[in-house]
Image (cartoon, rainbow, N blue to C red; front, top):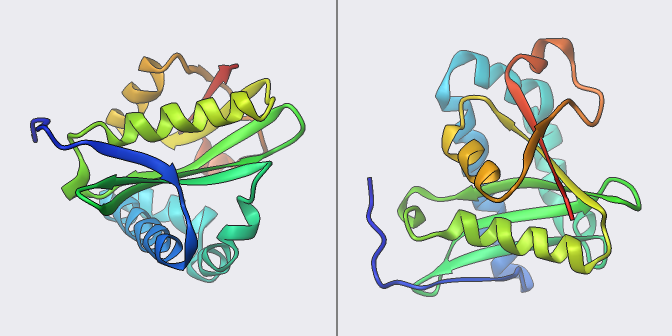
Length: 175
């Protein structure tokens, strides 16, 4: 386990091609990380994000998460992007947080908490009434983070294939 040092994490909106390239690389690393956890996680990734679909999503990040109804944030450590998180509107009242990930070398400095706090604040500023997200049951640190920030477990907020339900948890925060 890493211990926090005096390094300061900076959370800011992704800005320009360099940041978007870093976000895409982090998203691919996140996908690979999930696939490496277990066979069931790899099957879950294949269900929701087969490679061609994920590649298409990565190619459209800037439009899918464009202001004012979505955002892409990055976490910087020592001037390097080490984490990302994004949100988009599900409807007029609901913002969904997606692909929150911090690279292993950026963990232990508060990047994930900073990203989540900023995403929740952005949704509040944008006038959303609630934020939802889903995560794998196996991601215990993520689940603890969401709970620590006041998010409560809830049922699925969109259609989920039956074979995936047992592996996922769903969270909501009222803003």
